[in-house]
Length: 139
Image (cartoon, rainbow, N blue to C red; front, side):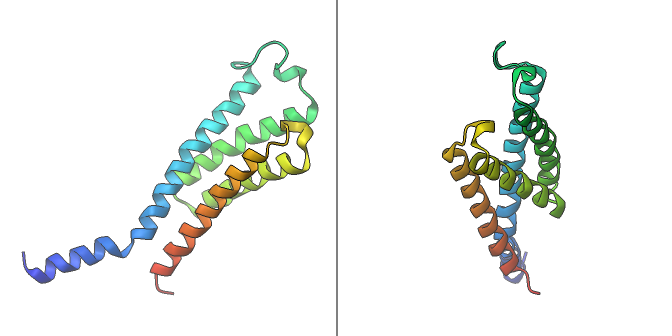
């Protein structure tokens, strides 16, 4: 193997470092989305919670939001794992939806600012990684 071939391999491996980091982040967020989606399905089906927290004993707003997140989180997880553009869009929809529900409708899930902060951190990390990955590819 020549010195030129070794240096070109090293350049190729360092060339898409931000893109690889973005894909790794998307895969981690896919796992998080699967866990969140399964948690919401566990609430719907009654696997978690007692008699008082049963799905049918909750308000219509809570039931609607829970079913919405049970479905959309799992759809987002598939798209994120595949690193598709639509997966990122669906995931961004879930992040913004959860933040809006927590801030604007605190009666549904309790209005936790911690959840909003975590969603904002994930959104910021995604935007930074996407921006850095876009910078490494020429237009």
